[in-house]
Length: 151
Length: 151
DNA sequence: CTCAATTACTTTGATAATCAAATTATATTT
DNA sequence: AAATATAATTTGATTATCAAAGTAATTGAG
Image 1 (cartoon, rainbow over the protein chains, first blue to last red):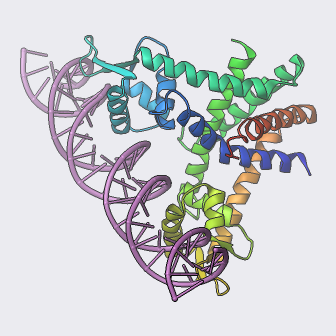
Image 2: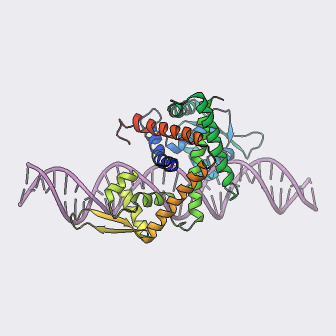
Image 3: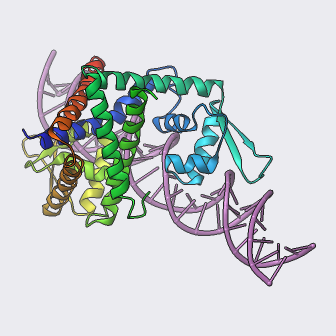
């Protein structure tokens, strides 16, 4: 089998399964009241002190209306706090509660495990190459598809 | 930033971008009446003569009820045909129409192009490293999460 | 300085994808 | 023959999403 076919085959299978696995890991853990989407919002808000709604909406690529309802739910569940900015009262700032930060860390651990196993059996030289390769591919996509006004 | 963090960050972004790109390519192409989900059902039915509903539902990891409605829509749109099996009249067999096969091929081509353009700028050494990493990730999922009967 | 335009967010009304549970029809087993 | 199991569909609900309309606050042009 050619390299191309191998890569294609693995990628297809990975893509088909990765969200599913992530979701199921979530559902058997401590934070099973979170959907995968909600966890990704939490991941995006991150541990930084505060973020605006619009920055977060842009980053997770949903409309602000969608984010509003997502945040409503995360607040109900106790993962996020919301307050109006005093400098500009149109702006709403959100941040993780203590429980939100715990969820963040749990999700981070999942990713760490994944990356650790991705990198095992690689020499440090190969790690360097990998980073170059991934950066390269990443740039390629953001370049190639920027022109269409997507990014 | 450690290698692990860098790799994680890029992988997460790549994953998000690729899904996004796939969706947007679909929407500007010939088969824009298909959602990404529907395209993946078509992909799964494939070019083989016929499949049962239950096999397909299992393969795409949805309940049979979900698949029934998905197939209803694909039939309305002219991509799939459905008939009752004559050997066992409980069983429903589905297959792609000619238009369904065209959509299948178009999706296949999209994947090929994506992989080709991602790989064409890599040296053969770099390709090897990439394949090793993808294989590791794939094994991480199929090994570690097999026990739960997920994979 | 004021009011028109812009910005940040929320609300509303709609759709798609999904599930679990109930239902229907057919096959299999006892 | 009756009970059980299987394959698919239907039903009733939930979640995620968007576009467009609405609200409140700020900015900028005259």
